[in-house]
Structure formats: structure tokens, C-alpha cells
Length: 113
Image 1: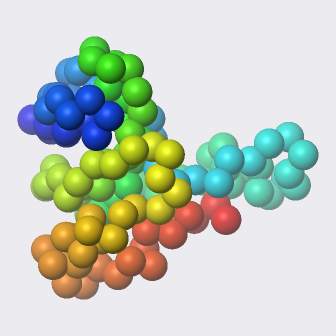
Image 2: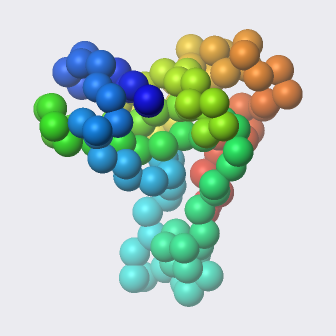
């Protein structure tokens, strides 16, 4: 079972108390953007086997959004942090690099930029 700690209220919550929100750190595109950028924002998302940055909402708790870094193959959680953070915090990137030597921080960049 996936258990994430909400960085907003500090509660450790299992996946039944959370609502997934998809890939984190996307640049939001509006109707004023060109068709290619808007299509990429709406439909083209990473779905990697391995390290992934995701949005989650503590639906059955404080109700706030946050980001989580985890491995989609093993459900290993590297850390959680507030949704208002533009990029993953360095301590989380360091934790990922220590556990996954073949992973590079450039893989955390926004694919829709």
C-alpha cells in the first residue's frame, strides 16, 4: 500500500485517503498558447517506470495539494513537498540520486516546456 506524508498537515495517509492529480511540475497552458503547446499540456504526459513526480490531494484530511517523488515500479517514496514548490527540493533529488545512481536531476524537468 502506498503511504504518503502530507507536508501541509504532517499526517501519514494511505492511498485511500488521497486523490491522485497526475504529473507534477507541468507548465500550465491556456487558450492563448499555440496548438502544439496546448496539446502537449492536455495530452502528453510522462508515465515512466521508475522515478516520477506526482501531484496528490489529501482528500480525506486537510484537503490540500502536494507533490510526491516516488518510484512507480516499487512504490518507494523519496519524499513529499508543498504543491507551490516550482521544482523538487534538493534534499529529495539527493535522496533519489543516492538510491538510483543511473537517474539524473535533468529527468525532473518539465516535459511540456
